[in-house]
Length: 148
Image (cartoon, rainbow, N blue to C red; front, side, top):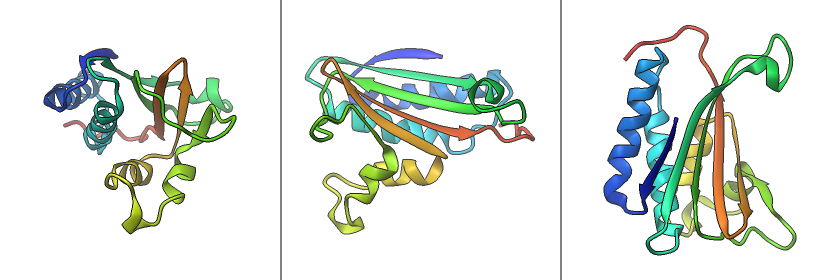
């Protein structure tokens, strides 16, 4: 699923509902993905250049294509905005856990959204390229689907 929305927190509900509907249509568990999408979308809106869109990509990737024939499938979510996050000298990509660990819990600059996202996913990364920032997270797909 790909979705492009205006960079306004008013559209966070549409992002959440779109992901929830996509998961339900594909008979997949929603779990906490609506919370993850909400946090990533809100962060992207706050960091985006004024008037630029926020892009959301949500898909399932085959585990066999990623790691080995017995690997589980992964659900992957990526949110991209047109705003550059200063990751550090000569850094184009960093693991999400690295960014979360850089700040003590009470000293996070704008809340605890990335810490929540990190806790709810298996892994993630933040990339900057061409004046755009993408946050991509993933989690193994549960073997026994729970329908919502």
